[in-house]
Image (cartoon, rainbow, N blue to C red; front, top):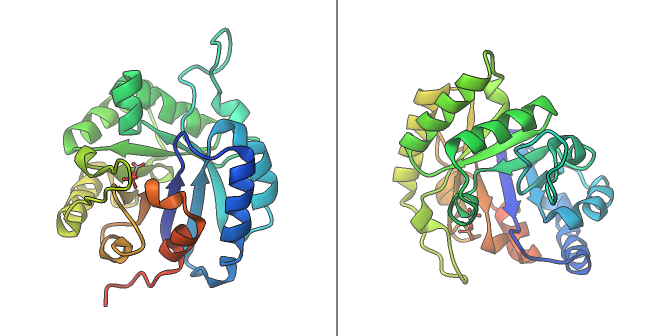
Length: 240
Ligand code: PGA
């Protein structure tokens, strides 16, 4: 397993053509990426088939979905299941605060999605913004699953106010983010990977990823620029 993970969340951005251009620019820097690092790119569903083919040529870069259906399969118009996604991706973001806010996703729904992802061998990247949300997610997961491979889950601590809009970057205090990651591990288990997300860019990434309990970052806005994202991936991740 890679030591640190960097996840790009493109949200509702980049068409197939735009994603192709992004990849061409990003691939130039592939040789400069540190060996102990995993990179996960999460484009929209419609871009996944093209990306799956192109990304297979790159070392250490994997694909993720931005969401997964809460239903296994059936009459659920518009939904994309974990079973369908596993042909293309190995990760799936679950419970992003934008889905909680705009689509009313509850901790119960997020727990169901996490378990469906795990059942189909996808690693859920579960976003939470407080210890209460972590506890509630754990409780809901526990109701549905007796035994759990929790070390296969990635949790992302994302304080809602730090998630950037229109290029404004207001990240959390890195010390506080590290403390939250530590508390999450104390709550769930020391083997779980905890990332930080919210206003990460190439200038501040080291202040988060270099901390003891932070196992990587989730990047939204700054991941849309392939050069900026390459800088995030290839920057020195040790705090000087
Ligand atoms: P941001 O988004 O990097 O634009 O703040 C983070 C996220 O997707 O949660």
